[in-house]
Length: 111
Image: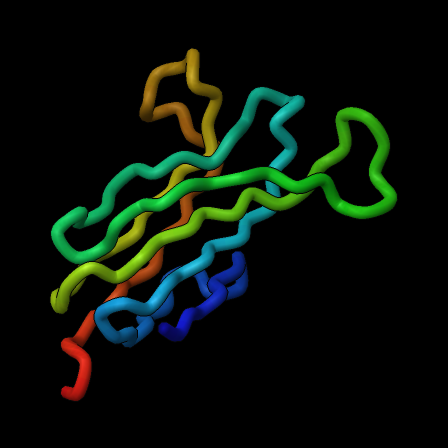
């Protein structure tokens, strides 16, 4: 099993992966402001969302920012966008302050 790590610098890019690969998307976040990254769209037939976690950046105090990491596995061949949005969960879904999107092209092993 191989994997790729995607960061904010990869916004809008296309990645080619193989069934069974993993994808980690790492984005800056400061949840104490109420703004958190969440999944907007994803083709669950191609990509499986595993989990997400937040880690505080070194040297930041209480309330400091950090990195949100989303973990995905490729379950089958196909194409899927992974779209994420940065918003406060209690506000309307269209009131995001940022969004992030990549295109994933998954192939079968051995192709």
